[in-house]
Length: 234
Image (cartoon, rainbow, N blue to C red; front, side, top):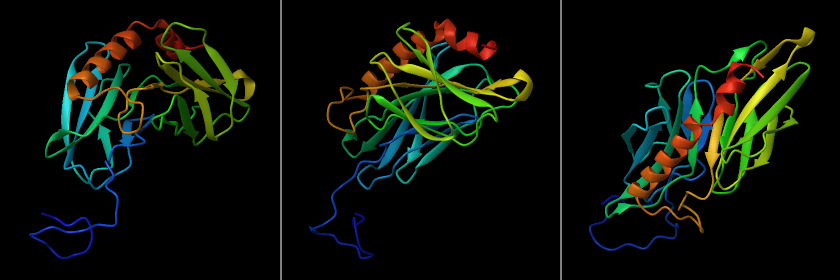
């Protein structure tokens, strides 16, 4: 067995002054291509990435090695929202589940375009987002609750900002305005809080339950007209 510290091997018992950390916390999702990143750990032996296609409810699982801290999903169709849950696994099975995050490619439109939006829930009900570039005149963040609640927007600047996320989840879109009334819209990012069991208070304890949550959120997003309406132009 590999020791948790030091270069030597040990066939017997050992003591460690390092706490065990399960990887998969702080899952982050980015616009552009669908890029996922997360914090690593030293307890898991691998990961299972769950992905649901919200247009068909088709579920795909991908096995990832224990040292993985990122994944780019190249097998996506533009205009379709995909949702993801990362499940770290160990010798005895599931170690927990990550936050549930969603994204779509190919929905950005107009000019100038916002770039570099990344969303994370960090096991909270608050979304933390970073934006690399916005509009020369104005940048607005649209918040679309998945429970059909009121769509709101706020002026933001490139950098780091936060937004509350209701229990049913929310999608976020960035609109940037240029000179002469030109505008551009980015790809959507979505998150659903309360799914992760990698911190206290989570409620999903198995791959099966994570799959059920993915399917439910996928059905909600697929029937949410606001996402496609905004993608077509505000």
